[in-house]
Length: 368
Image (cartoon, rainbow, N blue to C red; front, side, top):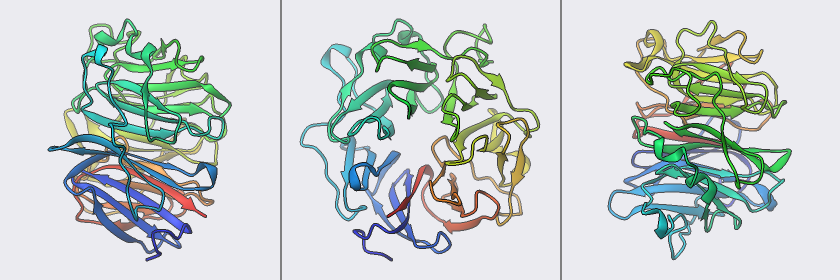
């Protein structure tokens, strides 16, 4: 395996219930994994920040003894740094304390040094020093609708933070179960962004907020186009989240957790459907990723190289991702502790590693 300081090839970060595993490959065919880093910590959030001529790994590690913390590494996991004071900390006035970091999202080149953290309880934090310290975004915490947000089965987590490559002041976030919210002024004001998204568990099936959003991804070619996997329902927005329409169409089921967009090709996105909220199992007990190449008008199953027998591995909301190489790699991990990858956009798959703890999140990047 390449030395941790060798920034060539490909990196795959796999967060699990019991630590972080790091995979390295020169060709995306053969992988070598190290770990666990942070053993016995639940790792729900990993960010890979390659701005400024370096690669920084950011990890939200959740110890049952020491509590949650944010760590970073500038040598691809060779060493880890933790701030002397908690990087993410709720102000005393909130009466809240951090339970978990659900998301670590570096902004783009339009906002150097900026990293966002989404947390449980649901709140947004912003860093301007690459993720070493964070400040809470007060206006979202103080939003009059926040106290009416519910909690999904896994907790009230802010699991999605999408920055806009055109505008550093434009953000969209999503909460289970509070719905999606967007800002156009750098977080000074927020409005719900759920028009057209169902909430079957509420008396009003199309409320202004309160939907149990599972994940949102931004299209590669059209920044106004978004793909949303809901707690029942798959949607697309063509106006940056102002309105949504169903694109469940010919999918075998509209329940699931993860959604990922192709890094270069507009209209292409990936899902891993599950049977239903009451049967959280792969549809027909088959291990299949579904891909659209026409922005959700049609979907095709991708399973070449995936297990052919009965399969029970559930893919969680942050455990499906792409890298940014060309051709693009697609990856997913499941609660069976298996990680699969495709080096050609999903056409062919192979098992990269197995027998890990429950996989909670997967992040990938081409290095060098």
